[in-house]
Image (cartoon, rainbow, N blue to C red; front, top):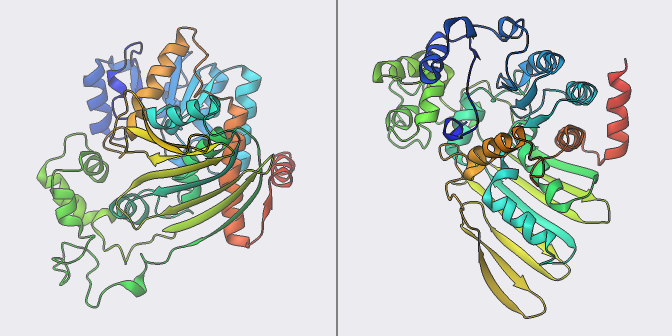
Length: 410
């Protein structure tokens, strides 16, 4: 995570990484001895417990095995989202952690951003009374969609996980946290509408570097995007190297999916989706995820005494008070404005690591923490949304959770 190495209170003492360049970079950066640098998590977790906290940052479908192994060793975990690829696997992790008595924090970094922490504080202080409705938009960004969910690791749900789980489990979690009640019903619509073969311009080549006649006008031409020097995290991803050279980038564009035409990839995840949520007490949420925008998140929270609204890139929240009929901008101190992946997710990366460091010192009172059972239940909202999108049904959450529990016993 961006900025994680800046947090006092942690010492990185081991690494498991199959890619040599990445493993060697981490070893050098943190001065890790050779015997604590392994190519696989299996090797590292075969050693008796040697640390307080393990970080599981494998791909989505590879979370379950190392997570269960680390829990069995007695490690507290920082687990990359989503918890796992299926609801049954998520339940297994939750039950294992509770049985072993270890703490598992899934990387729901929105909970730890100044923006969303500020919203939660204002709600708890009664600024808008009881929540009646929330409108929340996750604007993925057209270029982020092209990189991660068309060309990239999360382009195909059969190889990774559905978009609503991989990208928007953040939002399902944060929305339940803000409302503060259990979700009761879920309904969703969405599809892959644009990034598919029938929308490829005439004469488009398989790769952007193959002399495509539309290279100068295409929004998604991979060559200038990855060679511009503006997207370090993405360039490291396509080359699988921490400090790639121009030659490394050129090779990636010619040999990996990151150089393919966005209309001629193997992607199948949605590029837009809406989810309607109902919570105990009757509060409702309208959530939308869409690729076709600049990026970031926007939210409007409507209550019985007023409303709060703003964007995650803002350094303030706007409050409209019914009693005074006045609109006020409330500054959120220490707000980090850049919510992009390059900028540390609006301060969430630094926030979650700071909170974890404090927790290791005995401070468990951070309002952003939640139990692994709550995290599991919030993941179920995303799984239910995908079930609804595919089936067209309204999903009753109690029935859905019961079905997962029955399935896990088979």
